Image (cartoon, rainbow, N blue to C red; front, top):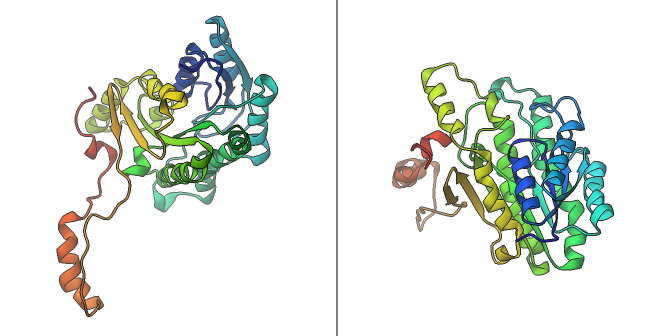
Length: 301
C-alpha cells in the first residue's frame, strides 16, 4: 500500500510513533525515524530509541534511517526533511507525532511549562510541515498526518498547555488542508486512545482513576497504525481536513465547530434582553464541562 513512499514519523522512538513506523515500513515505505530520545517531559537526549526502531525495521527487511533533530526548532525541522531528501531523494508523507507533557493545573502552570509543550506540539507540527511544503507543492502530492487529542477536542484536567496545542493542531491541519488542496496534498488529524509512555504519567490515586487507567491499558498503540497507513496511502486522496479518533477497534469521525443554535431580535440586543431571552433560549444546547472520559464513557470495543 505504501511501496516506495518516503515517510517521516516524528517521535517514532517508542509508543504510537514506533508502531506507525513499523506498520508503514511493513507496507513498503522508506522511513525517516525521528526521535530526540528525551523523557516524557522533554528533558535529555538519546539517539538510542530512534536507532533501535531503525534496526527493527531493517531486521524485517525494510528501509529506514534515524534522525535525532528536535521538531521544536525551525532549522532542526528543516534538517529532518533534508534527511529524507538526502537519503531517499523525495518526501511523500509527514506524520507529526512528536510530543511531550508538562501537566499541571492552569493556576499553577509556569510560563516555561506552557512554552515547552506549545513548542514541541504546535510549533513542531508547523515547522516540519512547513519544511516539507515546497517539496509537496513541486511534486503535486503529499500527505500530512497530524496527531491531536481529545484533551483539546473535548477537555481534561491539568493539561491547559497540551490541550491548547492539540486543539491548535486541529486548526492548523484544517488550514493546511485548505491551502494545499490545489496541490493535491491532504492533511488530516488522528486523536488516539492508547496506553503509551505519555499516558503512563496520569495519576492513579483513587479507585476511579485506577479504573480509568485499567480501561486505557486495554487499548494498544498498534491499533492506531492502520488508519495512519491508510491516510498515508494513495487510497486516501479524497480524504482531507478530517479529524479521526481511534479507540481499540473503533474509528470515530469527530465533529468540527459549526453553529448549533441561533436567536434573533429585530430591534437588536441589550445586555438585559440577552439575559432575559437569548441565554434561556440557548441554554439547552450549552456544553457541559465534559472531559474525554465523560464523552467516551463505555468500555473500548
